[in-house]
Length: 169
Picture 1 (cartoon, rainbow, N blue to C red):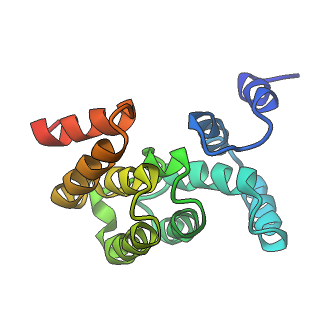
Picture 2 (cartoon, rainbow, N blue to C red):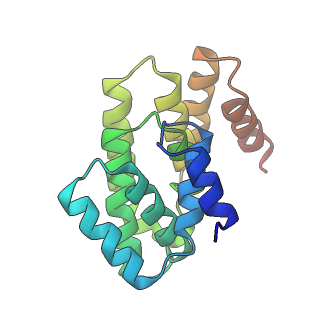
Picture 3 (cartoon, rainbow, N blue to C red):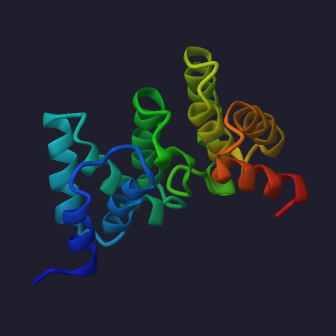
């Protein structure tokens, strides 16, 4: 039987860095412990298995305030920043941090700084950094989002996020 999530996954069979990749994160929120173990094993075999990684990010997002799950989530967040900083998922709540996870802020900020240094004119990378850091560092997020909007004024996502930070929403 096809569930709504499996149908969506069939229609978007390959993660491509767009908003549609959120499908995999949504699917991940409903994983069982056994499925999580299988996906983690799949990543050991192939770290570029983006479907598995996105599903795991969705799974760990639901548990982000608990340790050791927060550490597992951080591992996948950092992988995305290091290897796919321009992916839409990096601008989503799946990558954003709860204020309870301040222990991971420094390494996340450093990872974003390195990604921006490597991609100084890439609006997606800079904007994603702003979105990711918005909860714990709103001033830095505003700076990054303003630069991203300047580089890509038609990006509605970044413009909306910047406006929300400026109005305090």
